[in-house]
Image (cartoon, rainbow, N blue to C red; front, side):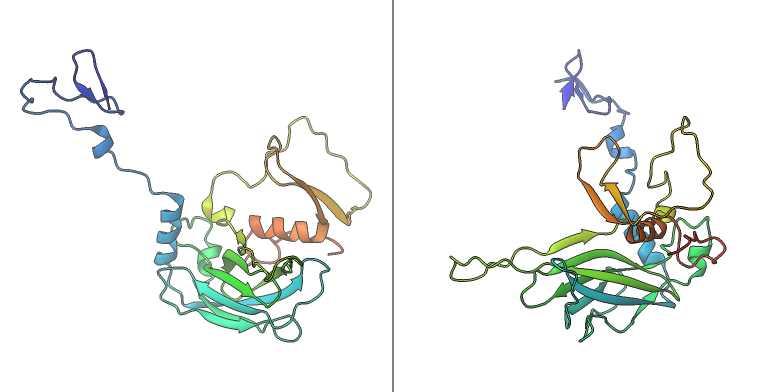
Length: 261
């Protein structure tokens, strides 16, 4: 709290009260900080959008577990599935079984009509679940914000990281869970696309036939950000990009198709 030249207390918004020792004015201006409504936070918006949905649809979640060290299947991983707060739906516990692939788990979710309405910005068009995976000898994995759409199967691949044992220690110290947080879908969030606008100076070339790379290097942030570059499978990359830009409920004619994938 600052003061103006007359010694009156002045709020950060610029409104001021009575000077010290002076009688308060009959109609003192109200502080703008107290009268102006605060915009809801993104978390509050999403919570409200989840609460507004009627969960009369059914989607499915399929879980696959494999080791991060060698990509070998990790069978019988115990998975807890929690639907986001406000839905009142109890948690579900399943396993990935001997094949490291679970049966499809039914998830209550909003009707697909919400995802087909391009003007919908009030009701989240998919169910949001949090997943925790545990297996002896591996660090627990927690994935928040998994999206499940009505009539669609969402495949969640669980990357299990082996516990590192210290031969000099009398016991193994299990690390904190590997946390992954999936953000709100760009189509519902609105605003800019998840990627930067192409430079106007770029001159496109038309090739005789499409060239699909096996690997692609991805910069984990905005172009100017000082973050890591990683090399990943192009197939995995393009599937992740597509699922972040369009809804899986859209008709096949509007979904991007990549030859050879």
